[in-house]
Image (cartoon, rainbow, N blue to C red; front, side):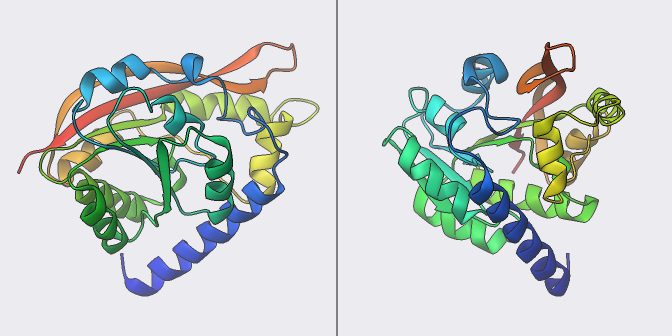
Length: 243
């Protein structure tokens, strides 16, 4: 990814996400992905597959809900995000055992500065790669590798292809998309799905070895027109460096 393109992308993402988090009403559950952690993320899989004695870095932590939920499972938790507004929320609303820092995942040098502080770490990346272009995804994975170092493991959790079909159905509703989906789109955030094995391919190209993978339903905070909870089809991939 050339430097000029990186700077444009980085500035744009920072502006978009700062605006989103600054304007979002206070309180858990206002964001589409900010539901009860116990019902929205397979934490037993996370803690079962990652190194129990290493720190965990929640990349794209937002307001810190999930970083806080993992605080009992790892010796140290660090939440990182490109949005200062998100981190401001996280610092005032999450378990004080969790630390937060700004990280631009499209800048592996920025990731290296975090690695100097934490050493080799587990990485938990939920719903992040799908927001990037293909070139940006490869750069983000390079940052994951820096954070992991030689000993850390990665837990990647991204929308499955079926999530794209679900989004299309929500957008096609007669009254328009549900409010939390509509809010995302208003800010220029473009949800996408990854190909069936696209995450694995990205990781293999970056020198990872796949440890485990599978499917999972993530319970969002959105409801359908009929009032039912909207469950998003997801795929998880666990990987570690081969070096």
